[in-house]
Length: 268
Length: 268
Image (cartoon, rainbow over all chains, first blue to last red; front, top):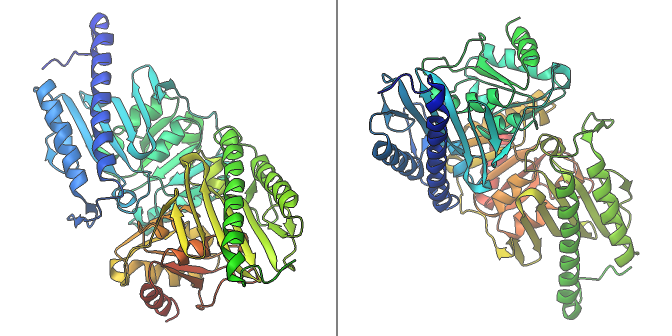
């Protein structure tokens, strides 16, 4: 393995572009599989944390893993459904269906999340929304929505911000809900429901702030390069960078200024 | 005006089909206009109830009103943005953009709602979702999703039900929230966010129960014929039919049995 993959500027752009292209091949595969199951597969099991999982989640993760192992046998893989280890310095992190409750109720807002990490830092991210044919992706220097450059809004003030979170049910700690409630009520608009799609909306400037709890690394690592390359800032609730070892609370903002203001209120 | 429009069986089917076709012409117009504004128009004003309204809401309602007045000058019109009166026995009820917060945040789940009432009863309903190209419509005897027949799920038990509501913020009375919370926690899955789209999902069997508060007649009248013609049951929280004079709390279920069970728990 080569931990200096992105250190040599001559080869860096080729390597990263090849990896980004490959991440899009993975997303293409996920799109086809998810569309085959959407609004047809309704059976599910409960995982240990009570969240639902379907044969579609498992089938997509298995196919993406097989593609990665064939193309990059030396890379590590961490997936929501089949685990993995995070020891290697080149790591793919997969969430086959982010928003399984949406998937199970015919709601077209679920997505496949693909992250590629070098030395613990997310360099490439993809948010693929299969039913809508929408995709956000990023590598260092370029964030795109459906192949076109995208950018966060210029919102720098909480009072003007449009705020999203997936569900009040994600805030298991009532104190976390109270903190979210305080910040979001100081904003212009708050709306619920969206899972990974919310971060795509943020990267395209359609909303300004997303605050969530109870996310796992496979839920947020793919989002970080997209949000940050598009001009935003995304950290945990303590303002620290998000890694495979981060806790479950994240905040993503259109600008560093808005991030700063929201974070201060969240922690006040 | 002819209050026996649907009473004479010979002319009824022609009349109702013509009205249903015309409702779809209105929905086509709404689709074109909404798509022109979606993800471009972001300015909004606040109405008296603090809800946002945009030039798209106003433009769509104005255009639909003009089409109705030209084709059916004798019919009444009640619209979200421009009011109207409900005296006549043949009445169109319009919500140009249901889900303005979605519209304003690039979220493709908002819809145009069109209802046609005879003697106070909603006979025709249309849910048009402009960005997704999805449409539910119904007239007596036929409910359709994108031109194909649709039907609610067979779910008869709350413990198996997939439950939707738009937002906890719609429950202005904390007691109403507690009642919703109790019912939805007894279900299999609960998810937030969706406005009118939720009722389309219900009519197609993708979710089983929708419970909301703070809806106005233009928010729910178009939904009733779709839900009920597709096999479901939709009433207020007291189990009464929904009319232009109904209160703001509605419950829609895939089957009368599920409606009955959820209503009993809601009122226990």
